[in-house]
Image 1 (tube, rainbow, N blue to C red):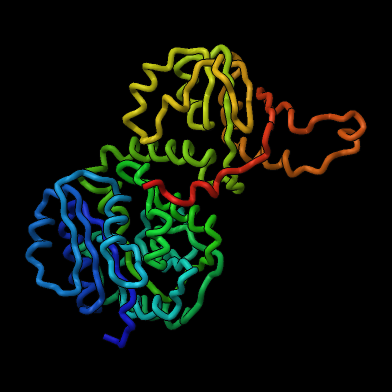
Image 2 (tube, rainbow, N blue to C red):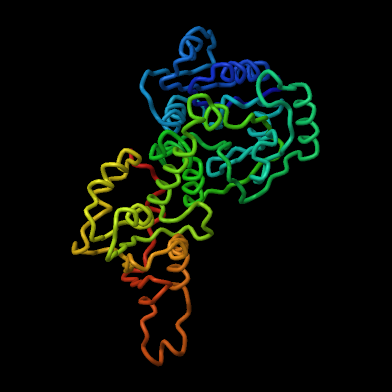
Length: 395
């Protein structure tokens, strides 16, 4: 092994799939016998806990529990247990390549988030991002071509020595200052059991004003989702888990992650002639929905899918309204086209607030903070945004 500073801990959350955990551990130890590895496993039932207990490794820290917790909880526990100044998130379905730690160590800094490069088989080949290379070196542990992988990674490293892509990073695979992650509260367990926690964290790191870049010569191979969407435990529930997570992301932030404008507004939706079906479609897109329906059945069905208190988000139509922005609509007018427009409402509000006052508005003293958009009547009572209040995860 090349000489390293040994100031990075590798963090890996485990949930069953022992074969991949062993492969990660032993391939990493071949390269880096002295690098700190931190494993956390909640409620693994396939022998993972027994295997961890059997390891005699002074540079291994692990935590096991029979509790069932979220993906976020596992990595937050890893971060708490780590003892090095910097931590790198990894999965157990990852194979590090030679030079990985050394190339990360050359760049780590307290106010910097580094995203490293993954080589992946062509499973999500259309999902392009900086630092992702599509190349097949095996679909699973049994078919892994480790020698071919190492040779290819070496060629990429030589070609891209110290090459970075600034202001880029849309991946879970990151390296950051440990105390920084602890200060902002790590990953958010709102996403249960998983999905969207990485999008959430990336957004919060950006809002923190940190510098980010993707590093092209710190490389691993990622089999892709062997312990999440394609695992035996979750594969039949993936679609529903992902739908719930996407909904919770919108509840928290007020926009889809794909939105180019990351402004969160305190929106009150005022809905006349509503029904339960409409309530389900509208509720995630505001801070509070005021509606003329009995919401008790909806709350009872939906509350198990979110930590956010739905009783605080759904109120009778005649309740007092003190939101920064009020949007009024008639439920009878709602169609798919209107619902699609509502999903971009944060962009519409932002553009309206930032638009210059026109001569017509001055002449007729028109209030540009009250306007019509599609079927919605919008009143901006306070042009404030609240996204930075969400940087820290509540403990």
